[in-house]
Image (tube, rainbow over all chains, first blue to last red; front, side):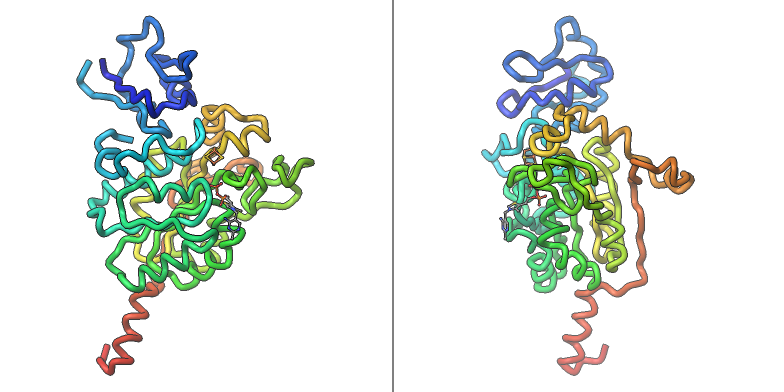
Length: 65
Length: 275
Ligand SMILES: Cc1ncc(C[n+]2csc(CCOP(=O)(O)OP(=O)(O)O)c2C)c(N)n1
Ligand code: SF4
């Protein structure tokens, strides 16, 4: 798994999900970012989410797939 | 931002921060920290000084020499600090209200003196902390709690203002354009003299909600769609520029003496040491 979520910091703003070019991310009903169903292997490690997350709550662990 | 940088530069136990969901302040602060790290400056050689406002709370999260000072007065405090210890890299964080309204006079005089400070203006077009009053940088025709029938005042271009007053480096980027923002902050830190970087950012709570673009991602998409790189901007007609704004390094000059250096010369002259 290439993505690391720091759930305690996530405020569910949805910026990561909106800008993910592969639509890997979603915001759950608990208002937390998570991997969307069926997208477990779709992350291309581009870092768009990590770069813009205002809460430092999502990180791309490159090569950890 | 990278997890290793959060661990290296953020004070332990202070996250999550107090900013609202989707507030751009966290992204801008991440870019500042990344820029400092890219410059390879020891954190003990950095002073991070802020005024008052949501964005000014940034100084409380980072493990530099920090001070969350007085509304509009971050620049004079930073100037004093820089004069007492010119070797410090002094970064100033200020909101659009903080630096262009109550602190507008301090801004023009810091620029006139060309003090070697790096000012980052977190421009979210509104007074966030106090509930959405318009600032001198709020675009004309916006709704604010102090303008329920829309603002009628033209906004300052804060970089034109700073440049006219004497700032020797001006640049703009947005919380959408993180690599660009990081790079212009790095250049601003490297520049010897007064650097002003406008970071266009979003306040979903107090600007977005009142102006019907409350979704944080859509506010960022707006930044993406309205920013134009300086090189392209220079080729555009006035009609094409309508509603858009230039990003990148907008001006830099190195022919003006920096203030603490000029002051050092005065000290030497007063001590009877020839220059
Ligand atoms: C001398 C003084 N006047 C007024 C205030 C109230 N006040 C606190 S923050 C603020 C404005 C904040 O807006 P801005 O500078 O744009 O920063 P933001 O909160 O949007 O980041 C004001 C007017 C104050 N703290 N001190
Ligand atoms: S009120 Fe606006 S500027 Fe303040 S934390 Fe919330 S979104 Fe950010």
